[in-house]
Amino acid sequence: MPLIYYPSPLLRTITQPLTQITAETRRMVSGMRDTMYASQALGIAAPQVGALERIFLIDGKQKPGTKGDPPPLVFINPEILSTDGTVSMQEGCLSLPSVYLSIVRPRQVTMQAMDLEGYPFLVEASGEFARILLHEFDHLEGRLMIDHISPFQRDRVQARVKSWRVDNCC
Image (cartoon, rainbow, N blue to C red):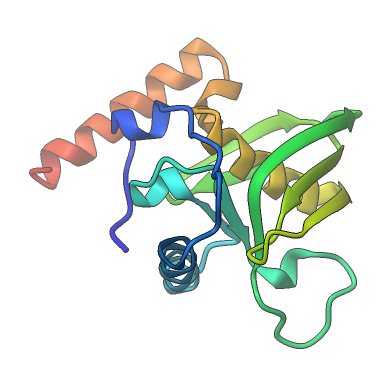
């Protein structure tokens, strides 16, 4: 699936909950999975491929305690139940290629969602796994990692992105 890049307004749109999981939903999740792995990403959210549903995927290897080659974790209509603590870590984003920023986020998160079969589940995460969940959840809310930095830093990133668009004629 083609990726959507900043500053596309699609990335600033709040997504809509799914009312049912259809064959189209499954095709979209499959395409998102292929795009995530082809991009060597840790996660991907529906707005990053132009869809405005409340869906994101996380590479299954990111969940602590997993072994082998687990399938991606699918989060449909996720909700944050609680967060705790804060920590600053480096982040990158498929929609802002080659931009890596130190972002302060909660250290722990408890989130509920549905899987691709429509079954609800609960995740309690900390560290990098929590960060990935919160990063992808932000995409569903129309937020980007640059919303977590100072206006000065944001201006520098925006100028850098603008120069790429001019250099690449896009």
